[in-house]
Length: 129
Figure 1 (cartoon, helix red, strand yellow):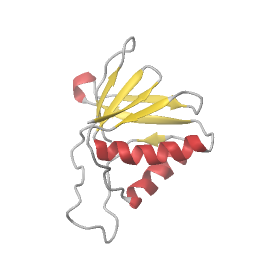
Figure 2 (cartoon, one colour):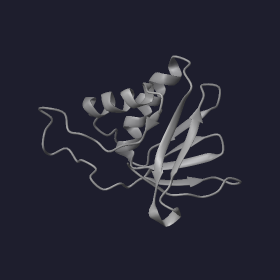
Figure 3 (cartoon, helix red, strand yellow):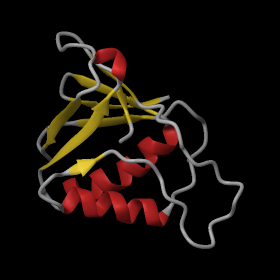
C-alpha cells in the first residue's frame, strides 16, 4: 500500500493505482493546472465521496511500498487523463485492460484504496469508484 501526501492529508492506494495516478497528476501539475481529485469513501466511513483540490503550489509526495515500479496501462492512463481534464476532475476509478495487454498482468477488480488523513485532519477510508 503506497501513499500520496498532499498538504496535511495522506491518501493510501495500492501501488498500481498510485503509479497511474502519479502519471496523470504530474502531467497536470507540470502544466501548472489545478484540478479536483475525488474518490469514493468506503462503507465503514459512511459510503460518501471525498475530494481534494490539487494545486501546483502545494507540495505533493508519492510513497510506494513495493520495491519495483508497477506496469503502466496506457488505456487506464487515457481514461484517468480524460477524467482529470473534465469539469468533474480526476475521479479515481478501476483499471481497464488495453487491447493486446498480456493476460498475466494483475487487474484490480475489488477496490483496495484506503484513505486516511494525517493529524489534525479527520481519518477516512475510500474505495475505487
